[in-house]
Every structure is written in C-alpha cells, then in structure tokens.
Amino acid sequence: MSQDPRNTEHGPRDEGAESGPSEHERLPPAEEDLAAAFVRETEVIEESIEDGKKVRRRGIYLLPNLFTTSALFAGFFSVVAGINGDFTAAAVAIFIAMVLDGLDGRVARMTNTQSAFGAEYDSLSDMVSFGVAPALVAFTWILQDIGKTGWVVAFLYVACAALRLARFNVQVGSVDKKWFIGLPSPSAAAFVAASVWTFHSFDADAVGFKLLMLLVVAAAGVLMVSNIRYYSFKEIDLKGPVPFVVLLAIVLGFVVISVEPSVMLLLLFGAYVASGPAQAIMRKMKQPPATG
Image (cartoon, rainbow, N blue to C red; front, side, top):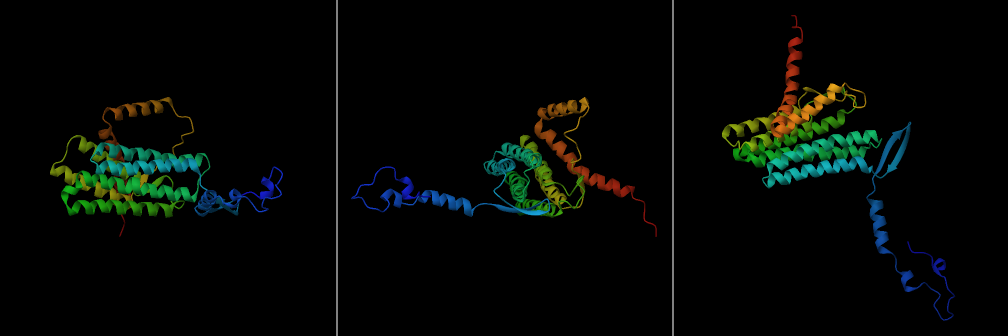
C-alpha cells in the first residue's frame, strides 16, 4: 500500500511546490495489490472441530503436501514414460509414487498436520498415480494390440480405482483398521506395474502374455471394488523394539529384491493380491455347514 505523503516528507517544502502528492506517490503499487488479491482470493480456509469448538484455519500444511505433490509428479511421469515407450521407467515411477504416498500420511500424523485439504489432495493424487497411470502404461505397452477389448479393460481398471478411492474416503473411521475392504489401489497399481516391468524385460509379447496382462489388469480392477478383506499392516508398531532377527530379515529382503527387482516385486505383490481371495476361501471352508 502507498504511504501517506505526510509520513514520507523529510525535507523542508518549497513555497512554490504543489501541496498535493508527488507523481511517484500518486501511482498505486499495482503489482503488490494484484499479488495480495491473488493470495486472498485463492486462500484455503478449513473448518474443523478442536476441543469441541469450531475453528477456522487459513492456509495449508506444506510438508505432507510436498510428499503428495511428489507422488503426483511420479504418477504423471509414469504416464509420460509409458507414452514414450520407456516402460521400465514408467513402472519404477509407480513404485516411487507408492513409497511417497505411504510417507505423506505418516508425516502428517507425526507432525500433527492432518487436514481435509490434504486428504482430498492425496485422494486425487492416488487417482492419477494408481488409477490412470497403471492402466495407460499397460495399454500403451500391450493391451492396445488386443483392440477394443484392451482399452475397455484399461478403462475398467480406471473406473474401479475411482470407485475404490471414493468408497475408502466415505468408510474412513467406520471399518476395522486391521483390514482393507477390497484390494488397496497402491497394491493393485504395483501388481500391474510389476507385471509390465517383468514381462517387458523378457520381451514377452506373445499372444499368451497379452491375454495374461488382460487378466492381470481386469483382476486387479475387480478386486479393488470387491468386499474381500486384505490385511492393512496398520497394527505393526514401528516405534516399539523388535528382535534383531527382524532387522536381519529386512536386510535379506532388500538383497533378494535387488537381485531381480521386477520379478521379486511381482512375486511379492502377486502374493499379496492372492492373499485376499485365499483367506476368504479359507474362512468360507471353516464355517460350519448350515443345518436345514
């Protein structure tokens, strides 16, 4: 804002000088006004309940949203890499997005910076990284060779990912935290990305592999919207002490994965994807038969 002319006068005024403000003082600082107006009009204002009182908070938390933005960038990079034919980089980018997506929520809880804006932003980022990116990467690599069926299955995966994320958002706080209802979208994306990475590394472009990828993408999509329960690993206490052998097992796990990352990640996430239906079948078999 421009200062008052009386506050900017430092020397004696000439008798012949005009009493009004100088030419410089008459010019409004347009740049500052536009910047202030832009900040004011684009500000995020959230209402939350704290200690039983409604609180209005302006602005967003930077740290967790930086991780979410990085995950979004990784997902978009995966799409671009897939379009350019670099399917290895596209698959790796999805895994990077998966790691970053796991960090933003934990960072928000550790720093007490949870917000409704962050939750919505994270969900939209997940839609790009774990919904659109895996489907487009699989389609541009091999599903497009199947014709109409290929893009229909790719769209099925995208639609199921959107439905899965929408259902998860409305069920938060109303389900057992020990389990996910339906295959989590990051795990579904990792399963598809690992399949593309592995089969592409071995130049697997036969008709059998095309049909296999069709089945992988379709199954991952359907499992996301199913009612099959998957273990969430949220009960694992990362802050508590663990036996030394646990750390040794983690080190050995990294060593095994580094030998052939694509194959090992495919086996790892393939086992997790299969664990849900396997446990559902086992629970069904354990139920006593209904008596007439």
